[in-house]
Length: 246
Image (cartoon, rainbow, N blue to C red; front, top):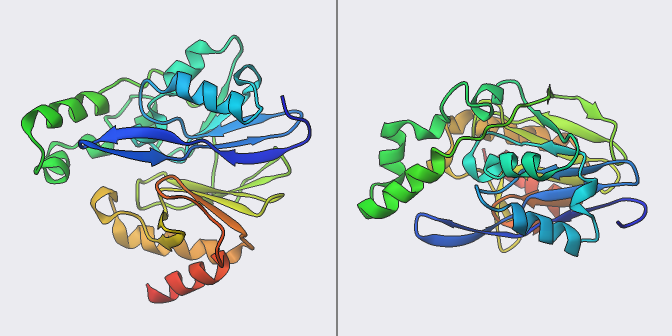
């Protein structure tokens, strides 16, 4: 395992709606803690394990999983991770998404009407495959809930930013030591240009856009977008321009 501390993104290939794309969980570590932020789609345990080893951080040292929200491409491999570990891994998420993550409520975006709108252009066979993916039981519990403004005492400090809209309990994370914002799906990026969340996949777009304004309170050098990857170009200026455009 690497010495001292660090933060890196993990690149996982996701096949959804017949199209392959790369998603970006984040890995944060120091000599005491190893945190994974989001877990990909179901069945990506081995890819995550290999990516961690490549980053020089052993899967056996993983202590915590933080979930930015309930969507299946963020929580899908949580069960596999928990079962594969030979020790307890603490799971943290916002209380508003907890019942969906734990299976007490069906995932919001599995609403039949919403699914029909999102995937209406796909052939029936593909729609059924996606439905089966979304129906995969998570079978894991949230050990502790985290709230807006909480400063987690791990890896130099991580501030929780409550950014609802994409889902009711969506959170983003600010890693103090590296001045990195892990945005989850509150932002997307393309060619290092930041934008608001995907309207098609966002429950309350107006609320989601208001949530983005919170980011201007932080001095950010790097943004990690789950869809779009790492952005380092004039981040604070981009965020200011984005919020002004709202």
